[in-house]
Image (cartoon, rainbow, N blue to C red; front, side):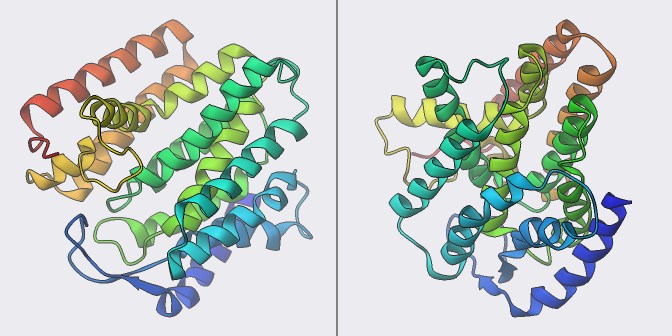
Length: 301
C-alpha cells in the first residue's frame, strides 16, 4: 500500500510540477536535443515527507537529506559552485555514518569511517554523473531499491520505489522531465544509506555489486582522466553510456542494457550465492570492456 500511494501521488505531483520546472537547454555535451524540464527528482523527497503522517515507516533518512535536496534544487535553478554542493554532500554522508546503529561495519574505527566517507561522497557524485540519458539512473535505482527492500527486509525505501516507478514513466526515452541534481544526489544518498544499513559484509557486498554497472563506468572514467592528468571535476562526455549513444545506440537500448545487467546481478544477490553474483558481475565487466572496444565512440580528451 505504501508503494502504491507513492506511485499515485508522485504521478499527479509530477503532472503539476513539470510545466513549472526550469528548462535544461542542450549544449555540446548534452545527449538530448530539445529543451527539457529538470528538477523533477524533488518528488523523491516530497513524497516520503507527505506520507509520514499516513504510513508507519522509518522516515528519519528522508528528514536527514532535506538540506541535500534543497541545495540540489537550488543548483538546478541557479548553478551553485561545486564547493557548496560538496560541503552539503559531505555533511550528509557524515550524519548518515554518525546516526547509523550498524555495528557490523565497525563505523567507530577511524579507517573504516574514512573509507565509508569516501564511498558515500563517491556514490552521491557517481549518481549525478550517470544521470545523463533518458531513464538510465531511474531504472538502475528502481532495481537497487527493490533489492534493498527485499535483502534488508525494510520498508524504508518503499516510498522511493513508488516515486521512481512513476518518475520513470516521464523520464524514459523520450524524456519529458529530468530528475536534475536534486534527484540524483538524493538517490545517491539513499543508496549509501542502504549500504550502511546492511546487516553483514555479505549484504553490503551484494548491494554494491547491484550498482556495479554504473560504478564500473564512473571509476573507469576517473582512472582514464587521472592517467591523462585531467581535472576529474571538470565536465566531460567520456562515460561509456555517453559514447554508446554518440556512436548511434539509442537512449532506450543503452538504458535497457545497463538495467538488464543490474537485474541479473540483483536476481543472483537475492536467489543465489555471493559467488554466483560475483561471476555475473565479472561477465558484466567483460561485456562493458567489449562494448567499449567495439560499439562506443572513441574517447576524445
